[in-house]
Image 1 (cartoon, rainbow, N blue to C red):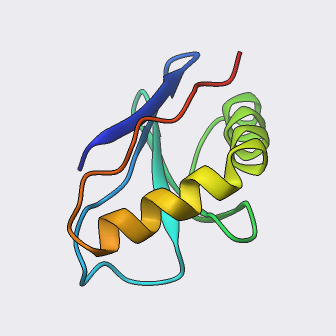
Image 2: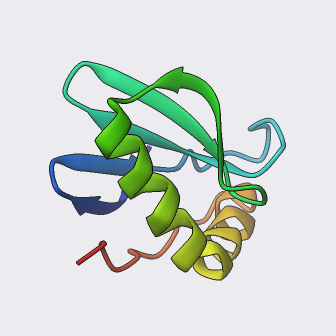
Image 3: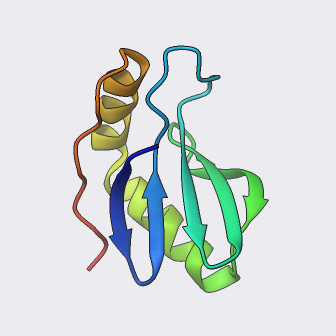
Length: 88
């Protein structure tokens, strides 16, 4: 699962497999915390992150939604997604 972005200790990854389940999503990691974020709704779907980190991830997802959806399409074609600029 390639890393597509990193910011403030948060790692964002996306699976590259056609059989990956919908809806389009990405995985966020912060220390021992893991979360799955729906790209289309920019909402937490599974797992958890500390409140501050979750807010940062959701804000980043809203800003980068088009890029995330484009990466999802690449990943579903078994292609490596592009790196996406971090939250600054």
